[in-house]
Figure 1 (cartoon, one colour):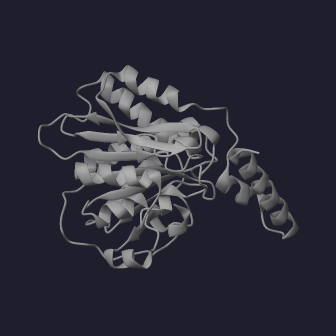
Figure 2: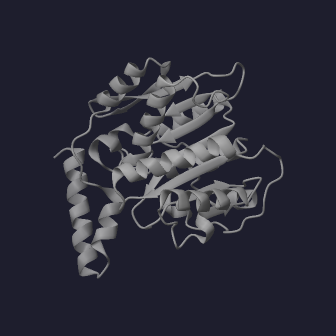
Figure 3: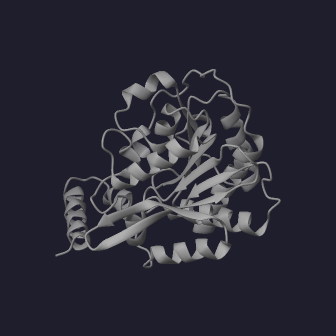
Length: 296
């Protein structure tokens, strides 16, 4: 029995136990695995190559007899300017973020006037094994999003190297949520705490979609003093701790159609890129202290 078969068998047992314990088996199952047509990382690499944009390999992750390269696409619009760093596919079953990152790369390749004052470093697929198999975790069963502390995973080691090299001026991590019906954002110590709630409300109205009801104003804001209380920092929190002053997680609801989820990611990215306030060293107080950190 290979790892995938063993993992699926384990999930079936978890599901049966959940049923006997009167725990919602649907929610527990959706958190780990989403059935989908077979996907292949090579098709993503071929799509990136076809754009003609500069592409580099951060390195590769190695599992059993398979090797998966992590590719980063760079777009240089302005000389000697730190890039906006965009990550997607940290959780393999959250496919809309990867699709949104790929569509942004396609548009940047086709239109040199798009975001003319912005440089980019885009890693559209952080968890290639999980993405191919529709699993949230990597081959080793590790949640990459929660392993940016201590030794981390093969994937986090490569992402950390990118963050150390690029000195990103903005980090955005694209995610999805199987539990909330609306979209929302999370930001760490945003210098302008009123900016993101305004952005979320504007987008909800423009797109005709709802904001997650359990999230006040559609934003979780975590202050710098709360970082130390979270022993398993997310990619965005890790980047913030390394000195990136603007870091965001975008969450879209999985219950929406894929096309709509991709559209939300792209619209939020556009707003962040075109309307983000100037950087400042002032750290805003936390409005929703440490809320729902385990979701990401």
